[in-house]
Image 1 (cartoon, rainbow, N blue to C red):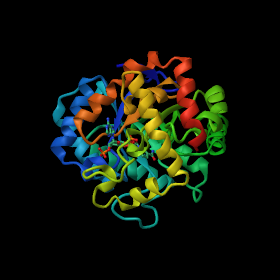
Image 2: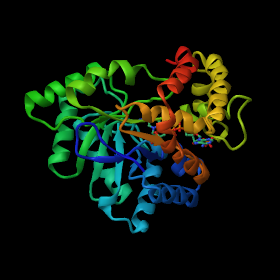
Image 3: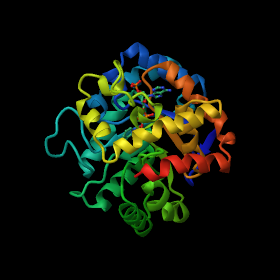
Length: 327
Ligand code: NDP
């Protein structure tokens, strides 16, 4: 495993990490979740990503029970939660980034995950209804209370992040360490262009999500929706719609076999190629893997050996296929 600093912080995060999004407490059973977490940890993965909203809190309950029984030293792993979407109910104050919800959601996540503190705590989306200073102060206070070690954002605009940094400097508060944006061969503008000044000026780290575009970049959706895949799972109609009806999907699907052929020529697989391409970006602190089977994780760890083989000439060929169809 490779380890990278999370932005300009001293926290070392495995270059490949593992998340629970639509799998834990939902698409997969608890024994599979356990196998996945152990497979990841045994391979050197030290960051496990979660959120209050994943399976309405159930993903954190499942992960917490596994962590508790694992016997792993608390210092050997990093676990996150995210606040914004709420879980169970969505009454006023049970969602969003108000001081009340940020603090209460943190306490609830700590209880579900059965830990004493969260290593990383994210604002899952921006909240236009709450002043940024209120949220930043709440995060700062959780850090000074020892309930959170580092905080970050997910899918905030560069302008919103810049405002957060400005307020932190002005009021001497703990600043965000990381963003959690979507980044893959088909979705790249924000990470590559919009955030560029933030890496330079504030040392922003990134923990990137959907590196395989929810499975598009495995080739499995090129001939329909296979049985037992994520987009086939019950309750996942909204995601099927979002992924398979997104703008430019036909062009993206046309690029997939070309990328697969290039991977084949390099003696590797498409998922590995797509993941190694993400890892090539020095502003990517960690690539969060989503997997519903241990074999997928094992396969995906092979991306680490591919990084060196993605020479400028190979990258140029990947770009020629993917860049014209990417957003
Ligand atoms: P991916 O884009 O990597 O998609 C994962 C899915 O791709 C798997 O569930 C699996 O689908 C398929 N897959 C993975 N590896 C392989 C393989 N080798 N061969 C075939 N199929 C494969 O990541 P996610 O979209 O799951 O995102 C990763 C993590 O990022 C999440 O768990 C979550 O922690 C985080 N995230 C954060 C968001 C945010 O807003 N901050 C939003 C979304 C995710 P299948 O089940 O069909 O086999």
